[in-house]
Image (cartoon, rainbow, N blue to C red; front, side, top):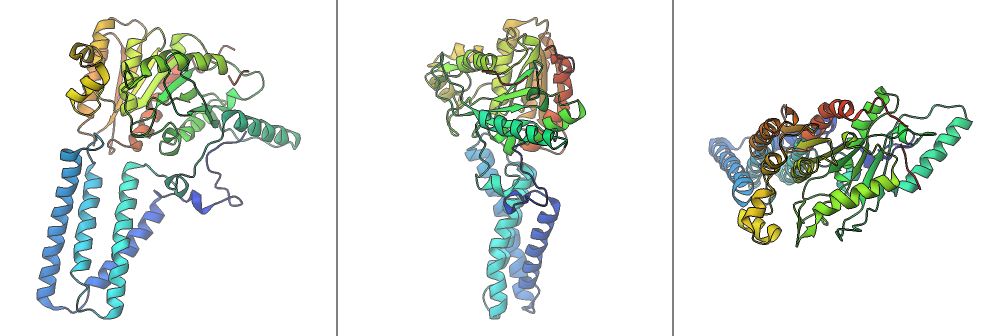
Length: 446
């Protein structure tokens, strides 16, 4: 079988597959930047210039911290607090820039040339450090937007062809799953969704495959379904699990609940789009028609990160007849599109009561007591904006009779590292709840 993940074997290695978060690359970049700064600073310029340089660096550092605070906590364009690591990179960047600018005048030409080169090095180091902190762009390919996935039918045909060739040659096929794009139309909802993503484990593409559990996974906002596999590395996590369990892992379907990267219809039915209907009627109908999955609610999980996490607890708690398990990774306490006033106006036609009823805590209370629903809640310990809400939701779920697990990811914030931690901890629980290791009868049909 053939994986869509980058093949980095010696014969097929591409510079596009260089890891942007690998320690050796980052250490080399940081080292070169520090050396450039030292060349600029370590020169016989006298006490006065030294005092000015130190003062400028302190002013630059303070400006960086204030700028990060303003962007994160005042302007708040993403609805997410910047992590301490990202804030410190802003401090280091502006401190470095200030030191360089204050040492350009009165220097030999070769020192000025090095100083000019130090400026982009500072910017590049800060960008790389922030990216490593967030985990958004793991490789050059992803950063350039070149990690295009093929349609699932085409990918499956290639994988099966490779498997046949390997079988004929008497070789062993690698135990990796298959990732591809599909179109899930909004037949009932009318929602104009972008292409969805599907992961099929090795057991789903073999001869006479058994029916497997399914996870409906939702990305954050802004974002797209492919983020789950590019930034989130979900296929790697599932492949590792499958390798340890005879090729078995859940089928994962990642539909588009946004419509566009900047949209946020909040997974409700409104003038912004009938997303509730899309995710609870159109998507399940497509899955049943095209994928060989177990049909009972106990085998279905809804999961999501950030805005997708909010959707997962909303829809999972409201539809226990459809989903038996929920994985909420750093979701919000309430659906949100800007301010509360804007949320009520845009998503609930001005009906404050309808908005209140759509809060996951209200949904849990309205459907309590649950008898078979399970929920896993995860947030990073460096995510002060979302962690308290996740704790609140976990308490509400447990109080409503939901089989509840709460995990706090050490050393991560509202980022893809938390998603990695969440899936690694949640996958064995999901496997146990969905009966993954005792399949009853996976793959693509039709």
